[in-house]
Amino acid sequence: MCMENNCPSEVFKPFQSNIITENCRAIAELELHERVDEIPRCLDTLKEMLRREIDLNPCLDDNFLIGFLRARKFHCQLAFNLLKKYYMAPVTYPSMFKNFTPRSCVNAINSNLHYFLPYRNSDGCAILLSKFGQWNPRTLSCDELLKFNIMCNEMALKNPVTQICGIITIADMKDFSWSHLLQIQISDVRCFVSTLQDCLPMRHKTTHIINHSSIFSMLFTLIKPLLTEKIRNRIYFHDTVHSLHKHISPEILPESLGGKLSNQPNQDFYISLLNSEESFIARQNYGYLSRRHLSK
Image 1 (tube, rainbow, N blue to C red):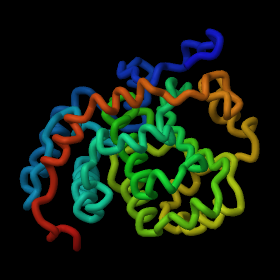
Image 2 (cartoon, rainbow, N blue to C red; image 1 turned 90 degrees about the vertical axis):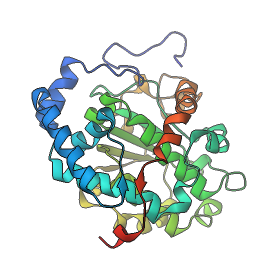
Image 3 (cartoon, rainbow, N blue to C red; image 1 turned 60 degrees about the vertical axis):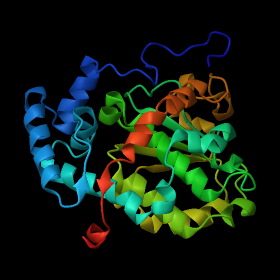
């Protein structure tokens, strides 16, 4: 991914790195209230809550559950509430989560529209690049596009470093046009926003929108009321790549965004995603057994 051996400095760790460094541990302790000696107790409390939930068949794997604890700063009740929303999402939005596995999304993978960049930001955040403006609605439906974005995020959240440091999203809207806008269903957008914002154990650090147009502004007008104030305040619009570089170093950005890395998609991420097929299949074995919880 490096151009002419111009690789980033060591401060930028590879996306796939899952080592919790001293700096990462400090972030966990300061920002997430994570205490190593308290983790077993919190996990036991959360598991007991899950076992008592009616009609729920939960995954009780420690590595899975700790992500929800981190997302809610080790407040067990809040982590439990997030888990319930996570398991209700496939019941609330069945079409979005039908065949929710990487190999069912090969068409989206081949489109190279969503992938995590090869290197993390200096603060440890993973960086998702979404090239919505390059989407071809004739070959990929809107729900497939959004479904794959959710899947990429969920895959990244398996990494403890991402759980602790969070995710930055870059939405490149170059060439976004009426042909795109007319193919977008507000119901799909509502499902997408609700899942990312309310159902995944995800630290949304910032969203950077670049190459936007008046047509995208129309779409954003529909999306904005669905966002929490916290998320809205973390969205930045950039008229130039130089503005983007104030937040993310060009050392870890592709050439198309004024960076020093190749424009080629991160194939290592796609390979890792495809190799996780079995874990996504196993995901479908867990969840609510009825629709009675939708009213809660």
